[in-house]
Image (cartoon, rainbow, N blue to C red; front, side):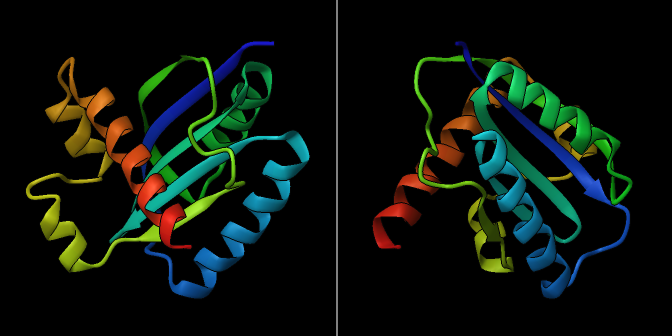
Length: 143
């Protein structure tokens, strides 16, 4: 079986409050566990950045369902490729809601799909992928 990942950005149709995010995460974690997909979701002021990984067929099927979800728009795939091993094997869906201080640490990095598309160069997808792996390792260490 081939392991695969998809990293994408999108924008919420309407900003989500904490209860809505919790509901989204509960459903995502339950569904991801069923199909053995792991991943991570970042959210900031209406923008999503999500990484999902697993068997290629499972990941692509999940991404197709995500793409059809009307709660967000402007989906933009930053990277999608074959991987040897999972980066986030312990998380059916890790999550972080970035606050203003965390966003400031990212400098001018804007999570919106439109900003990422405009700023996209050959190095950005791997840079974002690396950032998410680092976040996972740090969060997992202190969990």
